[in-house]
Image (tube, rainbow, N blue to C red; front, side, top):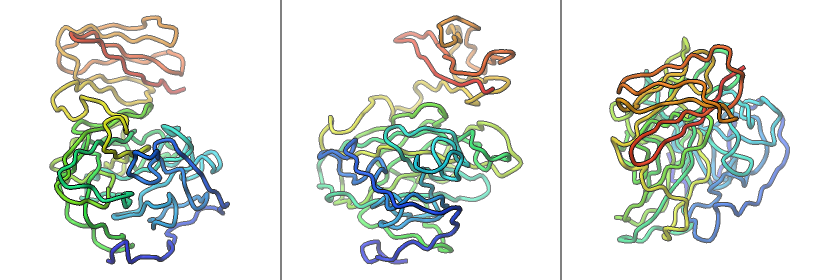
Length: 340
């Protein structure tokens, strides 16, 4: 294994599914002057490949490279339903949070402590003692075209880990031990498969970090999971990532104030999309819970018990619906999709 600073080799493809066409993107979305993450929204690419491989800085999303496993690079330029296409791929149905591309990484496996990571060198090293603000958008992979899903679990602990060194992963090499730490991560399970969830936080740099890595840097014992569906394959989770941002300016990256708080707002609904029965967990006892269609009509209501609530889809039309929970301090709404 060699340092990425010493590695100038081009990618050796693991599986090439189709031909490629040369494609370059120029994006200024999150890659503004305050963002220390080059190509943070993965728009700048060397080509448009149907591919499943591991990446080098000069292949795939430019600047990003694999430090474990073969993460996935999803592109809108590919034909509908391509292996790593957008919106429909083998693993998920999802549009980009912004732009035309995003990446995905394996974030849990029940039978092996395996993970996938994308990493990139920052525009400049972090300054020791300075406060930094970081964020990214995440969505659980689900509803791809695989008849027997490989990924059908959602996981927690997806986040950003900053390091002073980063090494290029090569096929067949062992994975590094888990750090069981990250500067910014989601302590709750990322279950939303329809919308993109903003994960953010701040930290004080204790080293002159040069790299940032995205994925789940915690082992299985420190990771919570939730099944989105079922499959005969080993339970694994895969998480989509878009718009990674790091800044010294609190206004330089999109931020939320509650994402790092544990034990708060543990309401989850699954599977999403749903075909038969929607399961709702974490609604406090006595809290009024309702489901509405896109016209605002209430289709169902119940009260929380602290356990699990169920809504049977029945003959409800395919499309977007809204779950609403009335709770002290502000009502909560959650979008979900009924499949046709």
